[in-house]
Length: 202
Image (cartoon, rainbow, N blue to C red; front, top):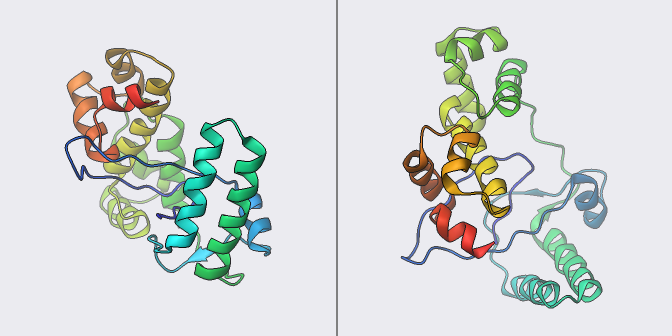
């Protein structure tokens, strides 16, 4: 199981020719804190959690949800998440240190206009630092360059539009990619499957 915090950038790689199948359980922070029995969201030392029993519970919840058994799915999911947090999450740890105001301003700008053109100079001006300083701080705090962060936001937008049935060429234009091949390259690298395979599976 992989645990990701809200807004955390991430990417996938292709593990085999037919891609990688996965199920996402999306909780808001208040719900996670309530299940955790804490005033803060659960904190994990590692993004990867290896626990076969909890994994079985999550798979069962997924099967029940797909079968239309929402009450059963929600019940199993709640129990599995409670066990996940109790066994593997820290007890009421403080939230991670917030990002600096400059990096936060740059991220906010990238989140606001992910499909539009934007320059490093504009980002640096929003952050109130030099371009070189912004890149250094951005990488230190997010693990990504501003450009890779922007591409990840564009891929997120593309996933939503593809899941809605929009043609890939139109998705590429609206999500901010130069063309369909540009979308294909970045989408496959970040998600682990091609846009076409992703759309067919959603």
